[in-house]
Image (cartoon, rainbow, N blue to C red; front, side, top):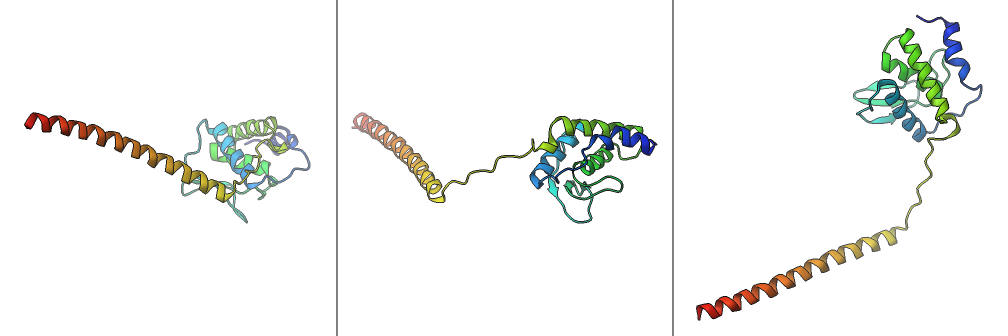
Length: 169
């Protein structure tokens, strides 16, 4: 098991003294990326936000992420999320878990998780009336196309009927 001194040198000293707590959307996006980095595969279940006295951990096939809960000697925010995902990947303390956590810490810092690189721009909402008008136009066009096909089919069938009526007469 690594010493506290080694742990501080490889992980804790890399984090800045002051950090903002990630938003829910950032925490989910970051947890997915960190899980993939640690395990080499994507998390297959749902990823949800949890609050209160709950850890970032898997529960009933879900990855539940708590963006602001500290974990023992690890403060909340990204350090806690990184620490607990490294445990998910290795599920024990030891040299391998420390190596995974060190790699995830470096990855988190390199990719700019602390500077907001995971933030998405807010979506602009369309006016409901415009959206509904567009839907009506689309449905009207589809029905007009169906009507043209039906008219063409009826014209062809009438031509065939005339042909067979002449043959039978």
